[in-house]
Image (cartoon, rainbow, N blue to C red; front, side, top):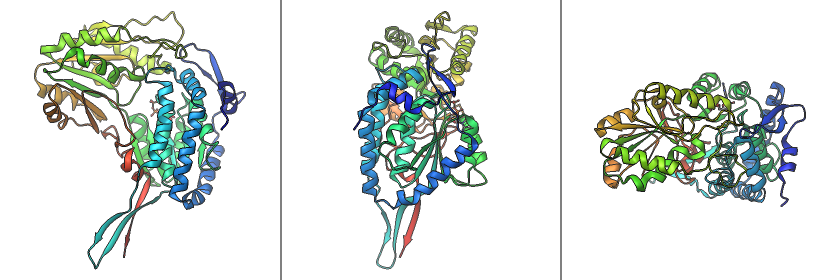
Length: 469
Ligand code: ADP
């Protein structure tokens, strides 16, 4: 298997004269990329439609083998993929970042290939024999965001392909090259038409969701766009999985050990420099250990290096784009103006190039402050003091969204009691945000519906069919 260099990878996916793509850490030009015209979007969907019957006609074993070969191709090109991802998204090579994300793509392809989807015998009583099968849906429109541009694409693509569907994938306009690079490598293995990229912004996404030739939408992005997709799809009724934004709460119970949990709290909130759907975005800490938790967290956070992603020592990077930098800056300024205490960070150095916002921890903040109730999606964590756990649970549940949540305690049973009362698709105990290809993942309330990963994720990109008789 041939190994691409970063230069040959960029050359394969860029279009001369297209829109410029800049590194969010250095502002250097990485390459140029063209957006798809409406005719190109229609052609991509038609190609996926044409390829689907023969892809579905292959055996499950053949498709599983191809997913493993796709994982081999990712591994063979991992360093070039990670370097491009780091340069375009901003996330460092090291830490739970670019190399980790590329490794996750291969791991998810393999796990998706290895997850059994057995036919379910529903009734077998001598007179009735009814079975539940999972059949291909057709063409999947996969619309992906800019925070984990390769891994989230694999989360949508791998199960769709496994279940006999073909895929049209639109990467985020902010991370088009990362999306195209992933598809380029996967397509060194996959048959033509099975996985087709299109490029562009929301209008191109809307063209996919409005197409009568798309049978299923897999979408990861904002709640606002998720609602638009539901409206756009009303006339054709494709099936939809929506993994939308969150504003995950962590609740630290009075019996937790502040020093022991500091590192887990940090990565739960600051992984990918806070640009993760299921990151901890507001932390509620009991008054009896509040100061110790804030101090331990700030002491850990102060020593975590942030900088240019290609510099091997860094594990935090810039914000991916100026729009998100503006959100984080506005919310931290609102917190400061309210009199909240900035324990760490909060003072970006605007003389440096790049979208760097320093690791920021804000204490003694009002529970209704915008930094608490709006999703910051960046490296700024509000820590809210509570006296009664009932109040913390009520505040955790008070928002429109419900993706993840966490409870931190030395008493697992007590933590599980609190977890059961949090309105979220996943509640972690003494950690936050870890995902696993064997474990289903999805949101409740405004964080969307449908599950990804595990056998539930595979069923979500198939149509159930009962065979009775
Ligand atoms: P974010 O604010 O995090 O960028 P978005 O929901 O805007 O989240 O974007 C996620 C993905 O959805 C991107 O690929 C984007 O281009 C796409 N998108 C934006 N608007 C629409 C739309 N109306 N229909 C379909 N896709 C869209």
